[in-house]
Amino acid sequence: MKLAKVFGLIFSIVLFLLLNSFDKRYLQPSVPVLNSNWSNIVFGIDNDESVAQLQLKYITVDNDGDIQHFLTSAPTPIDALIENGYSVSNMNRVITTSPLNVLTNNAYIIIQTYRTTLEDITIAVPFERITQGNSLCQTLSKKIVAQQGVLGVMTQTFKKTYQGGDLVASEIINQNILKTPVKEIVILEGPDDDPSEVPQIGYNCPYWESYIDNNVTANDEEKQWLKFTMRWESGCNAESNKNSYYKGLFQWDPCLWYEQFPNDNIFDGKAQIKRTLEKLRKGARPQYMWPAVYKKYVAKYGELSWLK
Image 1: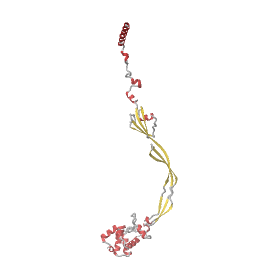
Image 2 (image 1 turned 60 degrees about the vertical axis):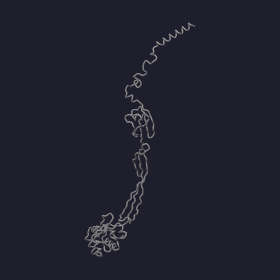
Image 3 (image 1 turned 90 degrees about the vertical axis):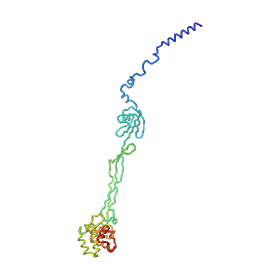
Image 4 (image 1 turned 60 degrees about the horizontal axis):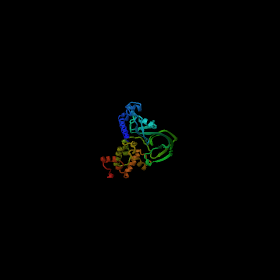
């Protein structure tokens, strides 16, 4: 029993000495896990800029509303699109938050696709309206349709360009008339007297004043008013046609003239003197029919006696 205790003690001492003398270098790594040349081992290059280009970027692609997200090492936005299967051609427009020559992280790339279509439509071609004849008063005229107008027919081919679902351009590239329109011809019948139909006397106050003095039955006051009014209204020109509406020696309204005197030529000076004197004697108010000139007359001669 004492011998067993002695052997146990000796074994413990030997074991202690062996453990104490063990080489501790085997308990820790003798070299680093990755040495300083690890990038060369992994990438095969030793250039910091090239390594940076191989870093992955997160991008978002909006292809006409279809939004997808990708991780890519492409150097530019266009390369990133092609790498991920997108078609990039002259029918696409690329908009990106990243410069086009270098792809940045978190770039948002929009692809707008253009498409063209050809569309044929049939339209009516309007016909031309031709009016034949003249009239000094439209309200007293009649329009007679001598030939009915007929619409034509034409086809047009449109080239339309869409960006996504939006129409951005449209142009006519061809048109073909299938049926030629037929003109409408209207005959205008109404008062159409012309200055050339009466003697050409022109601006001639002595002539017309002499005519009033020698050929018109009227008192001195009436003759004075007639001569004064025609001088200021037309310059004593019975063929006066310069005004777009008023005509003749006393510048009558054609509609008013032909409504009352349909058979008298408005450019006939003798007829205008006769009819004007008749209107005056029947109660026509010169201040309403010839307001500007009558104002001048009153300023020079006073009110007409029968109007006082």
